[in-house]
Image (cartoon, rainbow, N blue to C red; front, top):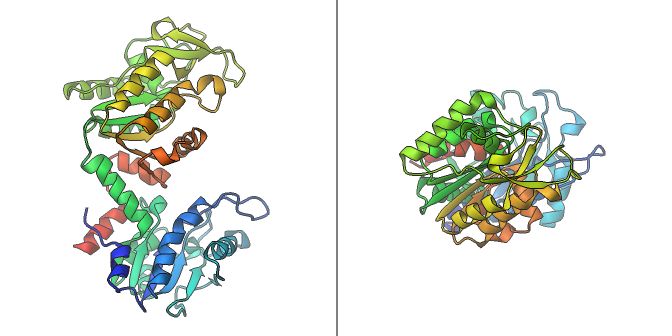
Length: 396
């Protein structure tokens, strides 16, 4: 995919003295006192901002925060805590500007943070008048918020249509590169791990991947539905019996291409869903009617780990068991460790997946960890994200 990189513009001196508008993702969690509890997204936005300042640009940055009502600004919607944290990270004061759509005063070498963009009327529906006004504020628009790349809003799409130049910041460019490497032109075999509680929420992803991957590993409640499709008893485990037909279709689609969806041969079960519930390893053919399947068994984990060790590319979305409970984390831990040890290029995304990566300390061993939840899932579904589409169009 062709797109303009902000890093190239800076290297060529094209950002010097220019007005640069950066759409970052600064939507961080806060406690009741309005204090930021986790600042990963703010820290991830710093490289693009530093790049612009180092290039001698006049820099404007904005983001959404929470779910404000358009046209009705409330104190809890303010980016003030973000401005404070960003200032600490950059070692400089970051002025916060409200009511900025009709004009912003910022000089080369200066940085301002523009108040919550979702308070502006027309932002979510990408109102053209709003988009044109925002585009008029800058010479270069920089999209650096992958977490919003699946939304065609004013600051994620509209401004990119009308700004003199529209490009990808370092964070978004890294996502675009990793996605292309993993899905558009992957080193084979390509193995995808898709896990979660429900097939219904991941069905389009499974159907899309079944056309492209060499192995499709399913886990969690999704695996239970596939076990039903394979004629196995799953007791009282979480599953969607009404989607067995769709699960069978995915299995058949893979089989037709000489690929496979491995069905667990052993599982870890309990009688109740609890951290202290006694865990029992059973063959997949021996699950009792009152059993709950809460993890894949060690035999299955070893088979899947062996498959991952010879993969060329691995895409990972979702833990394969209730890894939050020590007795049922074996499968997810084995998968995580195999991905870490595999020579394959790996890309991982999704909140629970990131939690598992952090729990097992393999951050440095995953090829790329995606920062976007919904956007990452839409990429796996085979959709072209609006941000990718408009940036490619502007680069043509």
